Image (cartoon, rainbow, N blue to C red):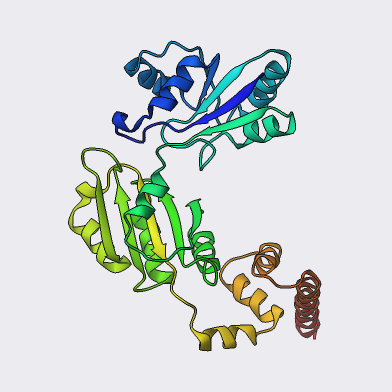
Length: 295
């Protein structure tokens, strides 16, 4: 009977690779890897000779169909791995897992290393709720809007970022949530593992004082400040039209501004009507301007 094994691999330290994970890869008929050049090094370290095929974001749709079709026709044990950590968590894999479930193929998780779980466990925050956000938008306006949207949700947000963009992310957090408490981990499970705890401003200063720290992959655990009650009351009293104008003044198109209001929980009909009202207002102002110009 075919089965798909979702296998977690080390995020840095090979000693974190579990005996069960090693045995699973040894006994599999096929290993699907995000980057075969990375995974083959891991396999060589443990003398694993199982055939290896690439499965990444650029071939995910086609490859998933091919693999599931083979598993339906043959009795195959297929192992899914990513470059490091647990597959299908900010990495390719969700599609083939979903298709396996739909095809009635058993899916078995082989748990192990996970960067965000490791960072969360050593962050020191006592909240029991958190939201894993992965990588946030790159554009500054979208990034700040996304950060703002986290308010009112889980008290902790877990974020991923590269060494080239982590300072930009911290700067955006400082603008949106000044004084916010953070735990920033880098090089988890590796020789130079390090975690910085403090306010976003303190951590930014540490990076500015020592650019050598900007290496490796980063996991941030952000404590979301509670929204100020006065601000909530003031914002809730604004009309949808006012919110649309505010977003458009920040550079959004009317279409994008309406989409943003929907994500904030505004009723679809109210947003639609507000958009019409603004369009009519703009038309009337333009018409009036042309009339005055002709006079």
